[in-house]
Length: 142
Image: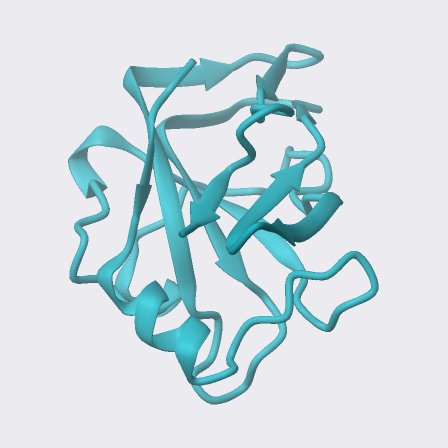
């Protein structure tokens, strides 16, 4: 499983009320795909900072919140796995970036990214599963 890396601005955005990750919240967590040549860096803040792959032949990139809760002062965000399906060539991409598609200010704030180690290209009908940890969640705030 690829390791999750958070963007530095995510911490400020959480404390500023930009995100609402509850299952009935206002944040739509969406996936962006970036090739190795266009790697995200921790100092990126919004989707416009990234160069994305084309999504013309890609299925929906919207994640589903499975649970969003805190226990004993630790908040955990759990997302359902997402299967991307190609209806033609998709990619190449190495990085799967999560962003909040709802806010207008800042527009499309970044959350974090997964590094899959090398570029992936999907051919027609191929799938790629973004496997989210159901036990530890995508992220925890302690």
